Length: 67
Image (cartoon, rainbow, N blue to C red; front, top):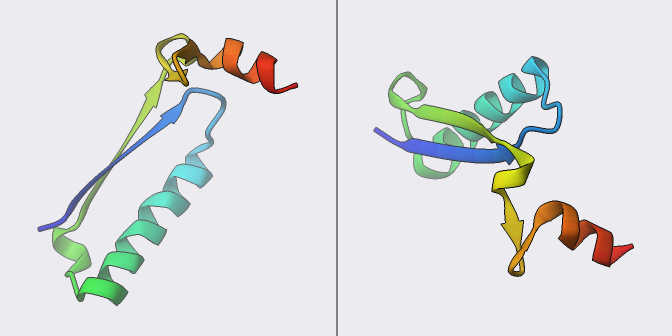
């Protein structure tokens, strides 16, 4: 019974994109590990951008440095 937890920033991920992530993840587990899709769980959490950090910085500050 695989459980996959995907976290993304809350920057407009659409329902169609989430559906594609769930299907693609489920298909990959079936193809690679022969896992039953009926018992594969995929959870997607959207994290507020202010709660996401990279390299010791809030993501917005990190991105500003990259420009």
